[in-house]
Length: 240
Image (cartoon, rainbow, N blue to C red; front, side, top):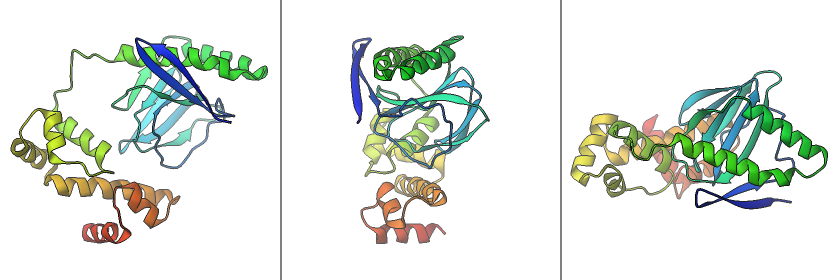
């Protein structure tokens, strides 16, 4: 049975989602996937390698990986004997982050979870875990220093929005520029126009999904934002 618990952190409701077997220390690889909520992976000991935003990330002992909602990611390789905690929570995160935890926190969390598992009441730990992780994420954010690298913001926009009908106007609003200025910046930073870049982002995600081999081509077409298989295949063939 699924469980959902709600706590309050810094005046925000934070929900942590749990399932039977949710707290697992069996580190294993999985296929490229995404969630509707923020995913948190905490490495207590050992090392994990992940794929997210088209790059590989290594998370070591005492570190926490935070993956924003809707972003494709996968667990690739774990060192032998790695212990980790994985869960999802409804908390606003915009970019992938690897955060160094305070000394001993990861081990303490694992030990606490193991104790609760031993008596069959791990769900009681969920509110505490949500509070700790949400506060750690919030402490890493600096709202007074917004990202000003427009090349980064453009790349981030396409990475997050390729699976829907994103518009030039939306990106212009994100950058605080006119659509004409934004179109020029997109071409300068990516070498192509807005629509072409959107297509490229979709097909890049499609290739990753194909490599995983978990979905049919029709399912992949829907996952990356195409309403019909024929439209997807036409775009894919044009990029070959």
